[in-house]
Length: 138
Ligand SMILES: [Zn+2]
Image (tube, rainbow, N blue to C red):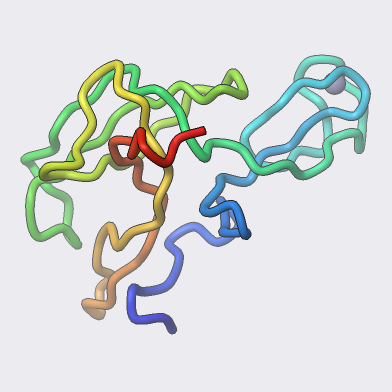
């Protein structure tokens, strides 16, 4: 186990030499991009046409809220929101708090961060967007 904990949803994403990404799939037949891998393209219904592509490295925050009535495993209120990805997908995700917490309309970038603790008190990591560092943006 890494110091930051295990991934809460293995297969949801990963990290390569360009940084963190969400696992997406692109249809070889029609070009449709989806979150996660599928056996059927949801647009053109071609079977076994989805090939893995990284998505969601950046996006734009569509809306957000802060959760104060916390489920077990959380120590303090946390922010969540919907992020519009340039791939045409809207994802629900955790948002970083504090100074790097994004506002609606902000460009955001993906990180993997400890989100909650399991029943044994071990941290689990998952995708969390933060306000993009514009100096490093392309
Ligand atoms: Zn397709």
